[in-house]
Each structure stands twice: as C-alpha cells, then as structure tokens.
Image 1: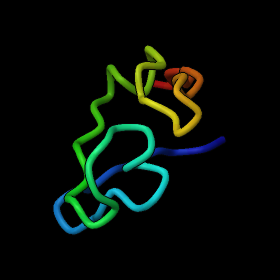
Image 2: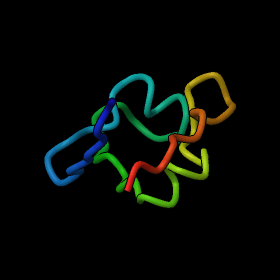
Image 3: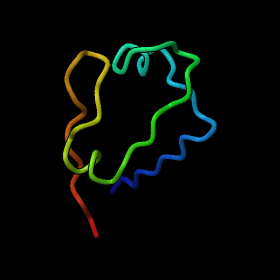
Image 4: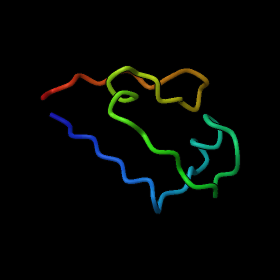
Length: 57
C-alpha cells in the first residue's frame, strides 16, 4: 500500500517538472490535488500523464 501526500510550499519543479509543465526547474512546484491523483491528470515528463491511483478510503 502506498500513501501519497504533497506539500508544494517549499518544493521546486526540478528538471522533470519543468519538462512536464514548462518553466524553469527552480520555479515553485504546483499543488497536486486528490482528484488529479485518482483521475490520472498529473503531467509526466514524457508528455503524457502519470497513471491514476486507486482510492483506498
């Protein structure tokens, strides 16, 4: 079982985030919502999307 949490306040995009979302690797990261995680709408660096997660609650 995997639990996902995301606190974007002090996180930068990094190389993969900049590739997936545009901008600079040093730009702040964007928030990731529960809906984005379970619906598979988080951009991936290859131009597609991360696979959806299974809701466990």
